[in-house]
Image 1 (cartoon, rainbow, N blue to C red):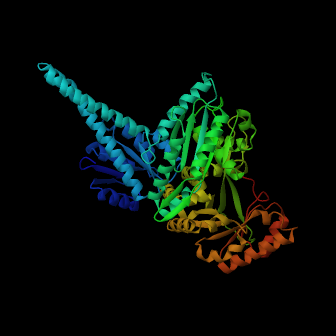
Image 2 (image 1 turned 45 degrees about the vertical axis):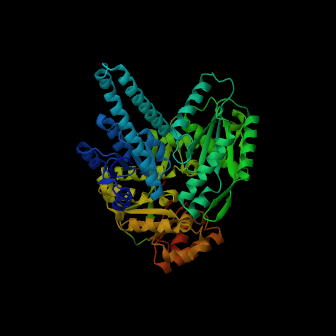
Image 3 (image 1 turned 30 degrees about the vertical axis):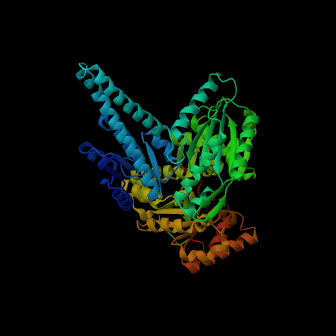
Length: 596
């Protein structure tokens, strides 16, 4: 850093502001803070910081919109913006909004310092370059009377400007950890290759290679992020050593993933490259703090074909091939042609992934509900309980697509939390716009996925929407699958605790699938038990399932928790559940789902 810098930190979570402020202050930088995007834009009207650290998820306008408004101001067009996010999927959207870099949550001090120093260096070089450009022409006019002196001076200044321009270009195109090309540069290069395929200007089919380090997470978690960065740098050096720079365009994609774009090659050449790279990696030993680690890599290659029209689509297909290869026990694969991609079962997963993304962008998802009924004949409460269900409208046929068809792919590609957020926001928005419906409802149940519960900013997102739409949190019950709750105990407990503070209740959904883990239940602050429908749907004819339901109800009584049974399709099941003491039920016998 060339001089005292001012950094604006924008986040609506006080703890995040405190942590980032401490880190930035330790770098001898002045700190300004804003707790919303609106406040940040007000501060930028009066102050000119050198850098903005911008949280993605905030009340009011989010980080993406804040960044777009910053870029719309001609005075702030060069101001570097680093997004702070817990979601890898937000990275591409952040760059599209005008961001320069990103920091992942949970916050790592070394990562923050490195990325901040990187962007500040780039910012000051750019400012110096502008100053030189502004003064250069004036100096030429002033010194024309002494050409020899002017020429010597100009030569120096032109050299300085060329150095700064070259340095700026390098910083804009390269990853600071590995020194390979970064994602932006890779996207530009791959887009050019895609264009060549579309216009049939390529003599041979270009290939896209994806490489990731199988042991990276173990080493990074065990030894720290500095060790992880060192591992990435050393593996990048090996890739650079093996790859011919005239043919292979090597980049760091994200995390431990490397990507290589090959304009001219054959499947045989790529297989030979993979074998050579694999040999180098097998002979490589990573040493850190007295420990030695052997490493291995997963490497796949796919042809860039006519049906691939965007960089993101190429990435998604390559990632799916990599995932399928790992699942089959193979860590190396070269896909030869388009037919091999099309015939693969994973193509269905990919199509669903793209369908989900389109559905979110085009607002094709719909909020439906099913009513939950009291099984107590003496209960004359006229208010109703409902469970919110999500449906996806087919853009071509207009028919409804049910979650069983797309949720697995949404989980596979890590976009299920986007669906959760869409459902929660649109449910609350519709209820706030229909007070007569809101006042007639006693409880609204919403399902949340395990991936959403693990996100540190997901519970705050729910609380922000409760406040935004002025809804009573005590009317909401969030359902978490029992197995996932027990597999992610710490995150689930934190999620439950935050929602309890606003009066929300928590239900353990599909209860019974984790039957052997009852000992953990006394440590989880849940409020309702919802029995897995697979046990309920045939309990009137299946004695084993009847016994499972009976055991769950008895446990619930000991824990003093109410029980909900789903998948009730016959009156005989209602009778059996009443005899066991189940309080609530839902299913087609009572109510078929309908649009909210």
